[in-house]
Image 1 (cartoon, rainbow, N blue to C red):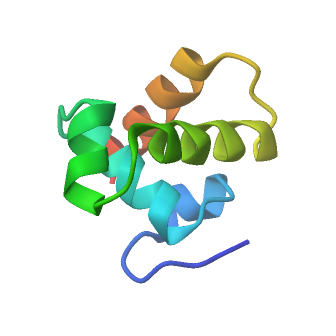
Image 2: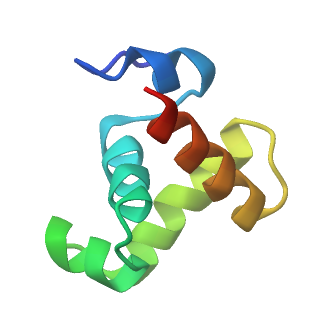
Image 3: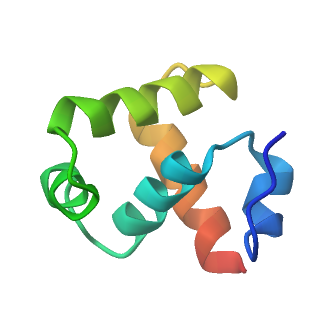
Length: 77
């Protein structure tokens, strides 16, 4: 599991890279995937792939449920 500074609660429960965590935090703040891509200077498909990789790695099959669970964990900290 990758440990990110200051993000131990969600990282302890989910296996996320720094980029995946940053993207999920941006989504939790209300940004769209397109806005996340612009903020990180990557393509929209790159943001979608980040989410998909994290989702599969953590055993989720539904993207919306995964994002909702991550947002819930982020807001709890």
